[in-house]
Image (cartoon, rainbow, N blue to C red):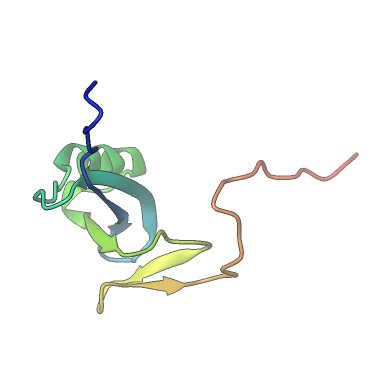
Length: 102
């Protein structure tokens, strides 16, 4: 590899896939694309999420966000903005539910 190699510049984007009627967030996605590249809609991902959630493909939409969603959020369908529904200091990973002891 030549010593003057410069890695390409990437842009990180966050996408929130949600139900168009309720604003319920169904999935989130982080994408790294080449700087200046055209955004990709990802129809296959939308179809897969719609099918997995039992919704029609037309009822699922994508919102691009500047920062990753943290905590419990939903999409305000009128303004297409993320709305916090719970504490924002919640971890970004799911934990197993704690079951009551015997």
